[in-house]
Length: 389
View 1 (cartoon, rainbow, N blue to C red):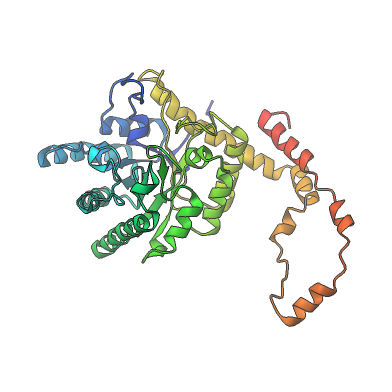
View 2 (spheres, helix red, strand yellow):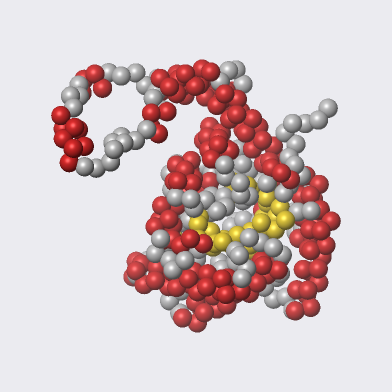
């Protein structure tokens, strides 16, 4: 019997080489399972029904690789892509790991470090273009500070913008057709990171020379670390037409970046995230930026990958059933949800509109006494999740 929760490439599920390739190393201990070669990752993901793969430059090509090493690795990677039909949906640059970036990359105080970071990004963009990546993500993992005196915010953001503008011009000049996506995060590894939330990133984008080609890549864990509502963050990105990519995982509020398997925490929020993505018409990659638990074996990595995709498909089914449930529709109507889409002043501003508004009679006590049915609405959602509705 077929499994309706078995993924197919059309589901657009993607994993980074660094996600399933994570060997279980953390701050407090070394690897707990062997490293997996990029071409083997591609083949195993193909077996699981994934759509694509993405990578940092050094996930695929080691930092110290020779030109001959580069071509050999790239050849094996391309061969695996051809054999499996997987696509490279996104590429990015590792501007965090090497000690040269200890004080930042695009926002390092030293101009030589900033030039090195831009040059490294240029080469990485070329690599992404070679394998067909259509989106390029920038995560400023070292763009921040631990002490106020070391990094004035204004000049740092000037340098951040300068780098993105330069790289955007390069992409246009080369005719690559790529879009950029900025990935916000509030902290870690730096004490405080620049562009810490989706809202910060959206404003920053509007200051760029080519704002039309730059969007956001929000991550569940990153907004949750700051105690924010990820569904709201994604909703605002969609509202701004700036959701170019998305990172799916799970996270507990107030903890370090845990990168848990999608669905491991806060299943109700993830239900509404899936509902939002599916109903919005978002058709980009669904990237699982997470890791198998450190205690897992080599084979457990693929249980993690399989489970991530399966959970999304289960939540997609539940979201569809919820939206079609007559009780849900009725309770949403009772809560006046459809009325939120109606203009408040449909005729727009005019002197007459002001007069009409001021002449209207409103009974504040009656407005306060209206029934919103939120308890019953949320209980119905909970029962759908628990399988009793």
